[in-house]
Length: 200
Length: 200
DNA sequence: ACCCCAAGCTGACAATTGTCATACCAATAA
DNA sequence: TTATTGGTATGACAATTGTCAGCTTGGGGT
Image (tube, rainbow over all chains, first blue to last red; front, side):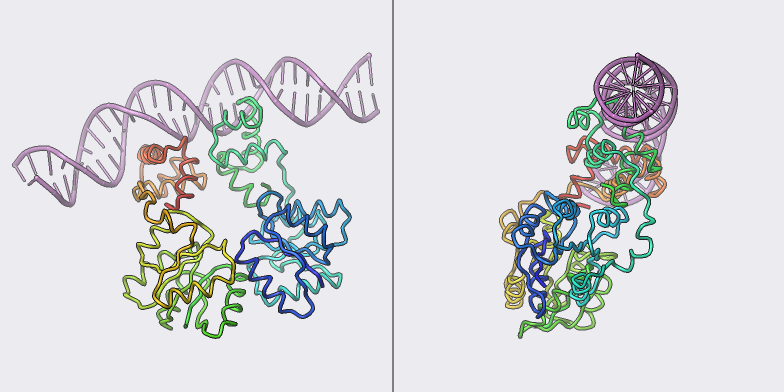
């Protein structure tokens, strides 16, 4: 089983590579510390499996999975992340990933999960398997998401407008919309809620 | 060299334990997934070294280090964290830690750093060693920090007041103070800045 | 050609937030 | 005793934010 590992935290990446190499049936053919590299490595080596984090600089692991789906790549994608966010799982499944594991997981089970995926099965973290699909869909539009992201960084309405080439009023309208949809009490609250559901 | 490892992410903790056990001169005598457990393990085993994360549920790694300093424990503390925040480093050094490592670090160097600390030396991540002490001190008061934390979660001025038993006006005063001290443009910006400097 | 809709925009108004000056009280320092 | 100071509170005012209704414009559908 040939795999590529993408994870931005050097320490964890190194530790996992070392451990996976100890498994007789696993070969780590490539490593990446961001999404761009991950994509390049997969295209170069066409491994059986890409084991990837979600939150990485540049392209996220979900973006990489989507791209590989478009490429009709034979490489199977397994996500490994800290976040048990419904939205992430849904996006992952939409992107055709075969596994979704949480970093809240004993190392010993990792190789096993990879083998299951290699054998054609799925490997979804048990905490998530239940409500897998009954996660509410993201109600936000692209604009609302963009505006919310900047609001979360502390930008004022007009500064957000400058960044996105929108008028201040329009930005306020989008924020108001988002606050309403998320039943938040203000922009910061809305940002938090969207983030924790995996919609940003 | 007997060590206790405290890290809340199961996967990383497990991986590090496995790797450290491969080192002939290192023995992992205890594991903890939060600060309370870490303190208990250290008191129970009196290891040579406590290798600990900072951000963990309950007590932070910095709190544990402070407590061990008060205990006059012989166990040396080595911090391992994602965050290169000046404030964290300063607090760590104040708490008498012997090492401050970043997770942005090759695994191979970990055992080496532990050995250096065991031998009586320090191990500070090179990225930080330079400006170690010239980090600006935290200008915020306890109240300002408390108010800022809640503001960062999206609470309104009055809700913050309710939580802290302060009037809305007072909360606004503290926020205004904090915003001024940090040269932020509003509460969210102030929250971000304080957070990224390791003051929250 | 006609209708509908989404993306943007504006204006008006209320609520919240940010700034400042001032005040009170208890504890501490001189 | 008499400042001084830190923590808390008010009130007043301006700026920003949140809500809402309504306007324009440029595609799609039919």
